[in-house]
Length: 355
Image (cartoon, rainbow, N blue to C red; front, side, top):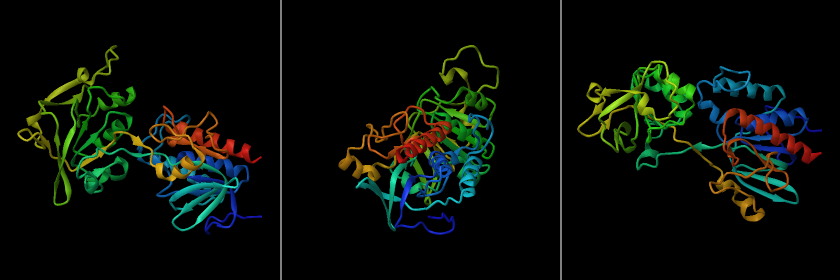
């Protein structure tokens, strides 16, 4: 009988019932379901537990938990795993293979074996792909407002993006920073209507619509500002008034113009905005293409054009005993509630496979 000890290393000679790659919401939920069925679980994570939800200052659409931070949600889920004596092994899986109906998971340190695998690697932030962007990450370029926002207290910052994540980041930063400039390449926001309504109440959130960032400005190794593609004639912010019956998503019709010369951080002559930080919220991409390469080439694992894993309604892939859960799946909706649902479904499918 193998006894799980959360304070010791895994037995590399054993074959685990279920190996889970990724300790985000989907991965930890899958582990919880597997542990409650008394299965041996290997839970691998390359960075820290929690995943993308850590970047959410407030989760308002999770059933029965209307107001919880992403950090608290992750900590609560991790506490449930600790209560079942489950540990997380912080190693990056570099390769996956399958021989004699057993999966092998190769990390830098060792090779693990499992009867089934649940892939729950999530996604990573999409970048702007500007020349000096990578060099400025952590030096003014950021992807997590809740993680790094406090570094720029009472400073001018910007958020780029038009979805709910961008709106949430802008709202969070507006409580910390002097001015928050929300930059979107379109005149339409994809954010939830409730978030747009909240944006309307924040007088220090200013919209730069129908525009793009052309150049990242750098001084002494730090981000010093951004150059915009189109000249600014005015800034915008949402009107603080009751909404009309018009549900058109064109944000310009809902905005008040503000003379740009009123803002000292904007250099009208050079069309540059002097800010201390830029938070990038333009979407997510699948990070595990190389990890799956062996299974794709040797066993014809099915993925879509973007590299996301194709699954059925039971989170099953086309390979026996191999499942995918959460944002790494090919799907239309990527939310916290769908991630935890996928984790439960994938674990249940794996349990059926093992029975």
